[in-house]
Image (tube, rainbow over all chains, first blue to last red; front, side, top):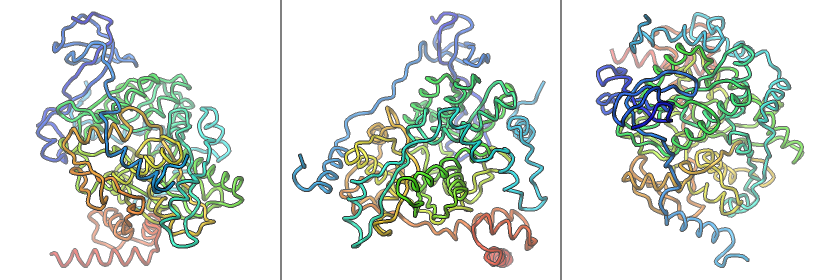
Length: 101
Length: 473
């Protein structure tokens, strides 16, 4: 249970598939337009349950509670051996077969 | 109670925009195809020294112009004898928010404050968001950034997630959406609900801000090398970077050719939910570059100040793999880690340098910050996780959305030439809409300026179009 005043992420549906713009391609037209917003809870709420937040600009926004204390999880990703190979090739092209001291 | 249905809000768009930009665009309309572009560009009422003053008040601009000596030396090995221009880069990553977009934001936020708005909204998934938030932080204004970020499964593009983080770090509220052009609908509703200023990328304020970049790089070349640049390359998406830079160069008395460069994403639909996460570049690509060149007014203001075909001497494309490769080259040969998308123009410059003599100055007019999510390692790991094939080989064999091929050696980099006349014909076609008549002299002159051609060229294109039209009937 997230408490009133906690910093959370909520999600809401803005447009149902049948309300989408006429120009969107078929795959997009088949799914709803969804919105994610962060803010402080105006009342206690559980994950997946309806919730309301006050955003950083003071707007009141409603949706379903997705995450408490939302974190940034993006990273530099897993090791990409091709990038190492490319670096080695560029050094060779520039400095010759032996890496210059 | 206001009708907030999609169609009702879209029908109010001009009215919403008028109060959100503080500029009445109707005063520039001619009633025909054309409008008073230069009149609109003068609407800020600011001279270049005044623009510079605004930039400095936000600590924006005055970025270093660096000579890339090792990359130049390497390019010369693949050039004919005596060829291989000196490659210079304007290190725009040194701006407070990490990209040239700071220039575009500074003037907009300045105008918003002058006109008494309490806050600013911008619709962008790119570096522009952080740029606007950064200036708002300094100006004490509230700020909302609206992003297209996730596909319908909730999988976010790592580069866009990083940009959201940066916007939040600088104090913004970030509204994230799933894929679709209806972002504009959400954006309009936010403008209407808050009464905030629309810091559109495409107002005269935004583009005049970028003019400071073209002006500065010309002056820096003169100071450091005793001459103006011989060629400038700009990464092209919405067209503002190229338009502003070229106009700024002209204001500094430099008519050197400006070359547009985009990442080739041919075949990927920009509004497709399933293709959204199959691209490794979220900007600087042909998915924006082509449509915004041939129809600038598709933007979020009635008339876009970014009109790249007016200024573009050439347009070249590079593959995703070539730009990632060049990003590695910048790190390993020049000791500079800068974000991939901004290096599209650098990859183009590596190819174009071979066409110019060794004493020529070739300026790459931007860099951008890099980091988690944005970095080529993050983008390639994400691509691989999503079933994109990654290998080292011949970059010409890549298929956007299916494969990324990193070159084996520098000699494989090729800047593919875009047929500018095809884009020009497309712009003219679009401008005519449903008209079945030859436009008058004023509109012919407008279209000639729009396409950097002559009224005779425009007349010839339209004659052909009308003939083709009659034949299909």
